[in-house]
Image (cartoon, rainbow, N blue to C red; front, side, top):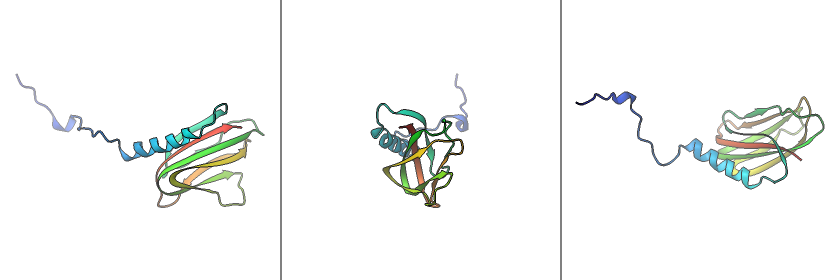
Length: 131
């Protein structure tokens, strides 16, 4: 007895190579992990598409010194923007797997955004640690 198979519902053959986003996310995360200092308290971390960016308000008591570490893997560049704003337009983050650090003091109104430039593509890995 033969059973009919609906070709539209069968799983497609998967390639051994991971999709570009997964590969770029792994590269960014690996670079981030390589510079993680032991003994520091991690507050938040994640991996995001450059087109989505990073948008967070860490829930820490006011007055704590923190370090944001960001790595972008892909093409173009992103920019770290801390609010309440600084007079500078933001710290650049090239999407070449370079590690970029930014120190800040926590507070209720602190917001962190990492925004990709208009043509930037790839993945951003980020981590906030208390110092």
